[in-house]
Length: 232
Image (cartoon, rainbow, N blue to C red; front, side, top):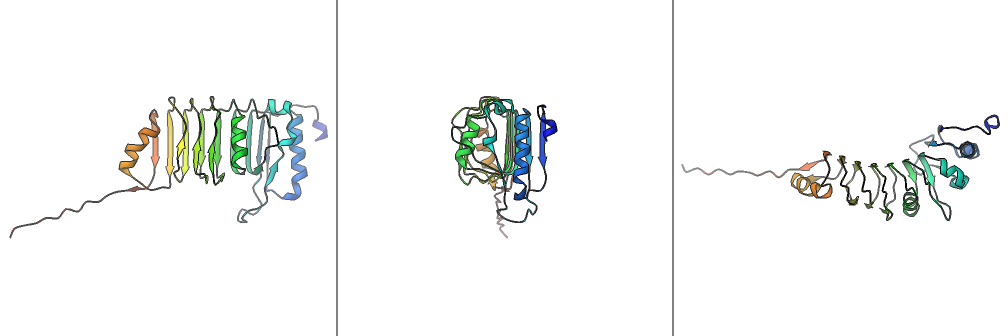
């Protein structure tokens, strides 16, 4: 690591089975990414045993990111990690993409994070369980792509007026994206059963401007039985 001090690294990915004995080593790599003005940082640290519930997760050291490194960061991926914002967090002003998988984070921290990513264009969250609603008051005025997959969330409220692609997978719950007049593509892969009548009447109101809609769901069909009477 010392041999590379003073160099610039465009992209850094750290990927291996996580063990909490390796925390200091991972922190050293993150610190190196900070000093190297890395633009793309990815941490993919699944536990060695995926079947163990509540396995230890790496806590992303946001405190290692100073104002200068935060300015350089464009792409951030966090998989199988936890995240806690420090006090007076100023956000990632130039972050373009944010990819979250099995991230352990509170509702407040995630809301504050998104509210302070003013240039975010691409956001994905998969299996991030808030067990609460997610409401981002500040407009995500540059967000073009949003994917939400299999997250235990009760409600999502965003203001993403320039959104072009929306992908949703899992159980259906209220989602308010604001006035998405530019929405072109939407994929809804739902676990929640619904009637065909409900889909045809509600979805056009929820996504009125979408040009290309793919819907996968279990539909409840009403069967009408016809009784015939004959005069013999």
